[in-house]
Amino acid sequence: MQPTVLLLGPPGSGKGTQAARLAGDRGFRQLATGDLLREARANGTELGRRAAEYMDRGELVPDDVILAMVCDAIARAGDEPIVLDGFPRSLPQAGALADALSQQERDLTAAILIDVPDNVVADRIMGRGEGRSDDNPETVRERLRVYHDETEPLVDYYDDRGLLRRVDGAQDPDAVYQEVRSAAA
Ligand code: ADP
Image (cartoon, rainbow, N blue to C red; front, side):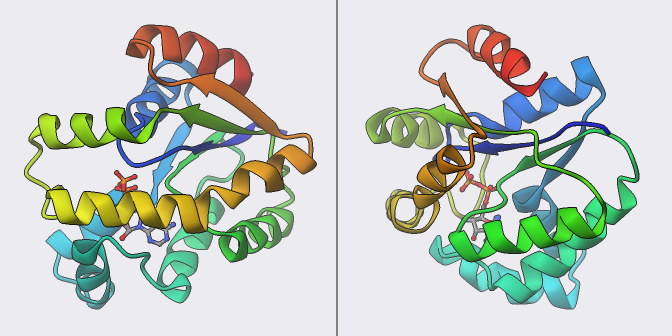
């Protein structure tokens, strides 16, 4: 069975960068909910329109929207290795992921936490200048709040299941990747 890993960490911790490296270097299929949502917005789909207002406030998009998207993407991955980036983001989403994976007869291999302090990620996001509509100081503060309230409980959830791997995300991207790659193997 091919590995299924997920990346946990605050906004701006480098999940997207590291997921892309696993894709390029190890042939993982990258499944990034933020990218899928931005794509849906750009295409002006109903799903994209519904998601936009939540994204611009820094809030979580409702689970029904996210789950339909993720289940479909996991099914389409067939037996390729998968790296999830930006999902799950809450305990209910983690439960839904467990169900979706068991339906596809897949097991989660590792939950990799890319650990970076709040002051570092806030500076990174404001400095990266990607022009995202949610990269303004107010929304970044809200995204960090949502991370600590909704997403951080997943650290204990996966630790309890023996799946958590911690990586120091304040290092340079190459050093972070060395740790991510061994955790994903
Ligand atoms: P970041 O990790 O930098 O916040 P993402 O691209 O992962 O960036 O997510 C951007 C926004 O998309 C989030 O603030 C949220 O509104 C929405 N989003 C992404 N993934 C999820 C998810 N799993 N559940 C709910 N909303 C999500």
